[in-house]
Length: 132
Image (cartoon, rainbow, N blue to C red; front, side, top):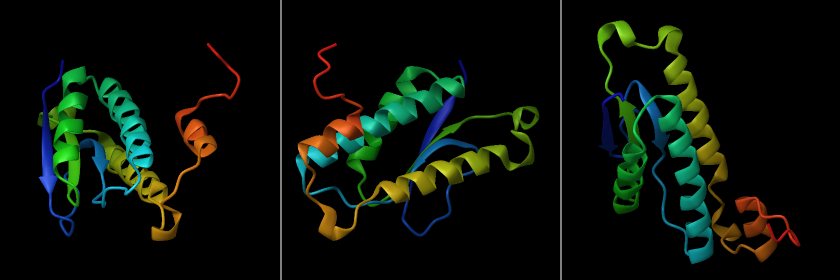
């Protein structure tokens, strides 16, 4: 398995290079359900990204622990690379930018704080009436 490190940065700093997953600075949700749904989705995304990068599952667990303790800061899970292992043509930077954009799009406006049961089920991928 590859080695990894986690970077915690202030909101104004640029994202770290060669990151597998980055979480943009954000304020916690007022709604517990929305906050729980956010961390559930983020956990799945970071675990998938870590697996694709060949990182151990523990890297995703540590990332989530640090991210929950550092609201308002950019958190990045990065793979330790040697010079010959660098991803060519900015592929890693493009992927990190795509994930960061998706995270920004998921943040609600201040007026959208409430979440209905149907929205939560849709966010978690639960199909109503499906007991399996």
